[in-house]
Length: 211
Image: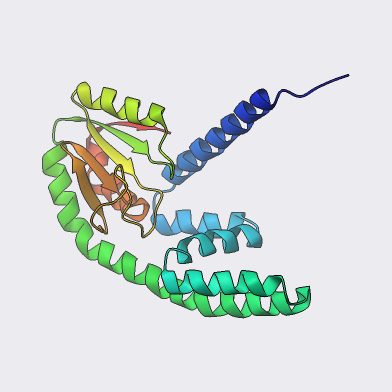
């Protein structure tokens, strides 16, 4: 009788997850502009994936999280057709709010990006720069890799996976729009700022991308 090793299955699933994550980061850096990257995310993913991504972001707000939980409770009471109607209504209300929030963030980032670029241009001048991509759950390997790179004297840029959250290498931190210095020569940056930084600063630097 053929049996399946649960440990091997878990390792295989983890490897596949890491590959998908690395491929997503590679595809991001293949775009020259943030809106091109955003367009590809929207057009290449199924609708349910887009909705799931959107809900992951809006759940960070307590009021919206409460509404989402109430919808979940309603799911146990109402019929499927009514639930779909409520879900659609909720989505149509939250979508404009999410769009307005994203637009506000991007406009603020646009205003801050010149100052941030000047700051990093000075800090990264003549340095070997390595770009790492932070995952929502940091692995011991990521931490060890970061410490090793820093010990070699490299400047490190860590691209955050979060659009709004201030979470970084530490569990909590001050909110930032473009970048935040986590520790000496280690900078946390937003995805939407990465494209401006690459064009104006990193194009002239000795750069390594680690997916």
